[in-house]
Image (cartoon, rainbow, N blue to C red; front, side, top):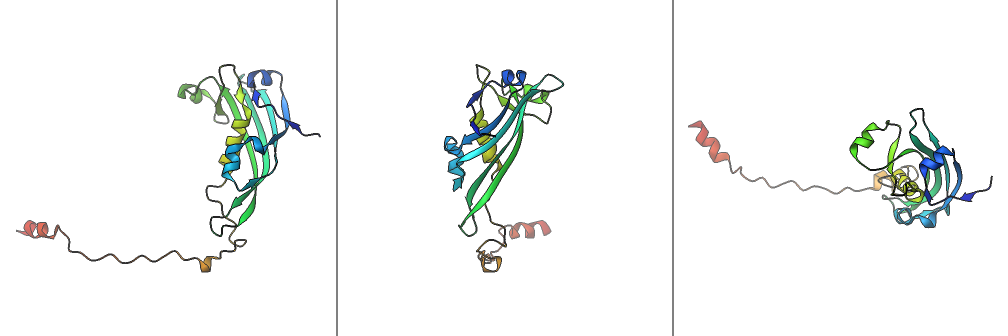
Length: 175
C-alpha cells in the first residue's frame, strides 16, 4: 500500500458519516514540539485513523501511531532508540465544558473542534506522541554504560545537635 500524506484539518463529523479511513504518514518536520522533545525522530510517522459513529450516535475516531525516536539517557547521556507505538480514541465536542466531557463514555477522550467543526489532526497526533514518551529517558540497566555499582549518590552530613528551644517550656509544665 502506498503511503499518502494525511490532511492537516479534518471535519470529524463529516468523515464519520462517510466512514473515512486514513492510512498514511505525517512528516516529523511538521511536528516541532515533538522534535524539541527527542534527540531524533524518524522522517515519517505512520498513522492509521478510522472515523465512525457508535451505537449511541456519537462520532468518534480511533487509530494507531508508530515511529522510531532517539532519546538521550539521563543516566549515561548516550543516545538510544525508543520505538513509539500509540493507540488512541477521541470524540469531538463543541466546547471543553465539564458537562459535555461527563456525558462522554470513558472509552473516548474529548477533543474540541473549532468554529468550522474541524480539528487540527497533526496537533492532536503530535500531542499523543509527546504524551507517550517516557517521563525520564533511561536505557535498560543492562544496556546502560553507567553501571549501578559506579553510581554515587552523595553523602548527607549529620545535622548539628542543637538544644531544643522549647525545652524551657517542658520545665514550666512540670511545675
